[in-house]
Image (cartoon, rainbow, N blue to C red; front, side, top):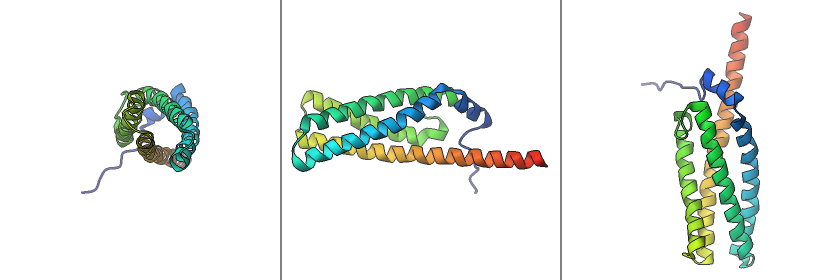
Amino acid sequence: MRQQYRPLYTAEERVRRDNTVWTLVQGILAPIQFLIFLISLGMVMNFVLSGTGQSMAEFSVVVKTLVLYTIMITGAIWERQVFGRYLFAPAFYWEDMMSMLVLALHTAYLYALYEHALGAQQLMALALCAYATYVVNAMQFVMKLRAARKQSEWQGNSGNAMGAA
C-alpha cells in the first residue's frame, strides 16, 4: 500500500505561517540559540579537557537553557498560530517529541546544578548529552525548513505552470 503524501503546510497553514510575527521571532532566536550553543560547547569542552573554567562552563549551560526555554515557548505559540495547537501538530510531531527530550535533559542539568546532585565532570557529561539531543533536534528543524522551501518552490512552479495554461 502506498503512503499518501501530505504536504508540510496546507495553503491556509502556509498563509498563517507567513503572516504571523512568531515566524520571524523563531527565525531570529534559532541562530542566536545556535551561536550560544557553540560558545557554551566550547566552554564545556574546555572544562572537560583542561579542568579550568568550571564556573563559566556551568553559567554558559544555564544561559543556553534559558534561551532554549524561550525558543520553546515562542515555538509553541508559533505552532498554535499556524496549526491550531501548541505542540505535537502532525507536521512537527517528531520534532516536538525530540524537543521534549532536549528540554528534559536541560532541565535535569539545572536541577543537578542547583541541588549539587552531580560532580563537575558528571554535570558536564549531562550537559553534553543535552547538547547532543539539541543538535539532533536542530537538524530535524533544518530538514523541515528545507522541506518547506521545496514545497513552496514546487507549489510556486506548479502554480505558475497552471496559471500559464
